[in-house]
Amino acid sequence: MAEITSQMVMQLREKTQVGVLDCKKALAEAEGDLEKAIELLRKKGIMKAGKVKDKVATEGLVGSYIHTGGRIGVLVEVNCQTDFVAKGEEFQQLVRDIAMQIAASPNVEFVSVDDVDQDIKDRELAIEVQREDLLSKPEKIRAQIAQGRVDKLFKERALLEQPFIKDQSISVGELITQKIAKIGENIKVRRFARFVLGEGLEKEEKNFAEEVAAQTGGA
Image 1 (cartoon, helix red, strand yellow):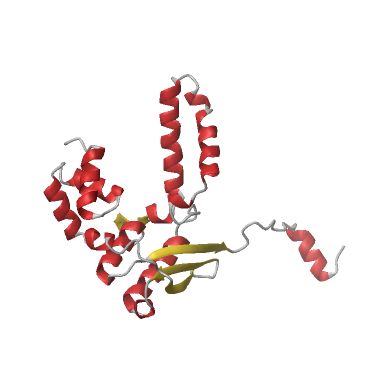
Image 2 (cartoon, rainbow, N blue to C red; image 1 turned 180 degrees about the horizontal axis):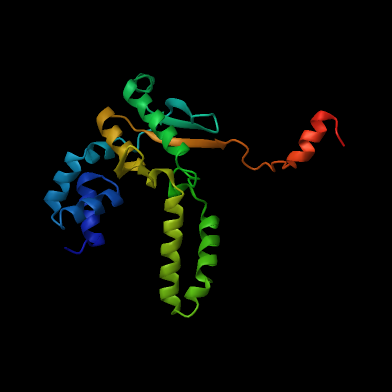
């Protein structure tokens, strides 16, 4: 396996205008071969998607999903560039799939890792550095391990990092990239809310015998 250096990643990025993470993945898959990496990005539609990802997306839909029995509900806003695309079946199906994904992901709190406030990241890092199992390690190693744990923590809470429920081989972020390439417009998940019936409420627990007595007028 060829070592993928930052210089190789930046070179591919300059040639394709694709994001750093996608460049790194393509180079790893191509075993460091730049031309093969470019071809992989073309085949996956990522190069085409990269050209429109910076465009402003202000149209779109607010989609919803209610799980069977009405115990879990989701609202999600997904943006695109034009009303024409927003009315299309391809985009509407994507919104439904994303809403369903959120319903199935109880740990998800953010759209992406970039949405997490830096002070929250710093606070979690400070906690991890002081974990008992790390205190005996050298400071530099301890910091690296703690940072890795924090990165993993927030990836687990980010919607775009989740394996897509209908195809576990891709993430939600990769699904959206594929749709951008196919539709030809920028697509972004802006925000979402997940509701669980009774969440946060203290449920009153009654003694069954007392409840029956109360209903029948008994003592």
